[in-house]
Image (tube, rainbow, N blue to C red; front, side, top):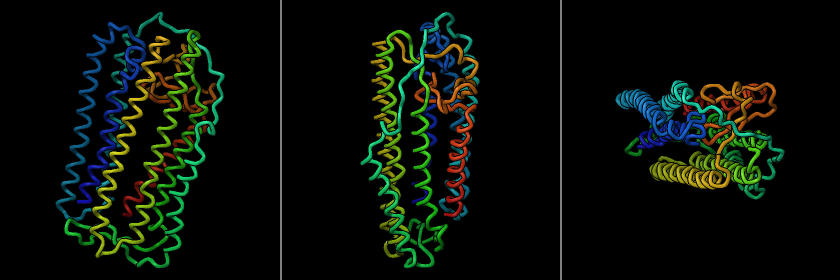
Length: 375
């Protein structure tokens, strides 16, 4: 029962990635269709045909990856040798494979959209002189509360470590019988709590780099454009903080399971874990939905007041790659650049600090895989 719940919960990440790429080409409508400004006529005619083919191909890739993962799950289920790691590890690989396939498909169809790019529609632009600081988008009380949520459970776990049994029940079957144990050692016991803290570090690195991202402004309606873009940026920072809470909330629950779980109470923790996971998943979906709705309203107001929702520099044309998902400009000191595609910023791969961010993220992935194999 727990294994099936974990399988379904991890599948949510694949669904989230699918919906992201389905919506990505038309986030800015004709102003940035697959990253290219096209006419309204091209957007509603040839553009719709390109979009339909792209979405069918993306759905086919999703079905193919999920079918392969499901077959692996059924095979493992038939052997009766199910563990959290043996199920979640293929799901992580499925997420990576789906990301790669979606990026390739986006690149292929963006080239088709480039044929219909509208010429002679360049908007005069200027650079923003506004200086952002991380402190302007940080709530001190929130940071203190989040730190307590992360580190107090770890201190309690450290204090209780000597009293833990040599084998800790961790995974139960459908009858409530223990079928998975954790050995009592520092690495095994603290690896999952450490992972939760490590993930917080990446969010903080991301927030810090985002405040130094560059933004291009139109010469006309500059004040109105900057005001709405700043509101959009603040929504993004708030969204990241709420995601940090989603990733931090499991900390006290995980520590409580390690310390207080016992065979006779295992069933309670099993049911509690499922309910907690489902509740956390619902909360995360509500956060995403709220962010999308608020951002759509900001873009609507931006379009109404300025007539545009994104601005691209002509000189940046040669620096965009992979359908304008990636950016490479040695002359820019920014780590992140506002992308004309979708609701995101692109990383500047010419900046050496960009590789520190990527290495940290890759380290997070390897840490997740290693822990899952252990558990």
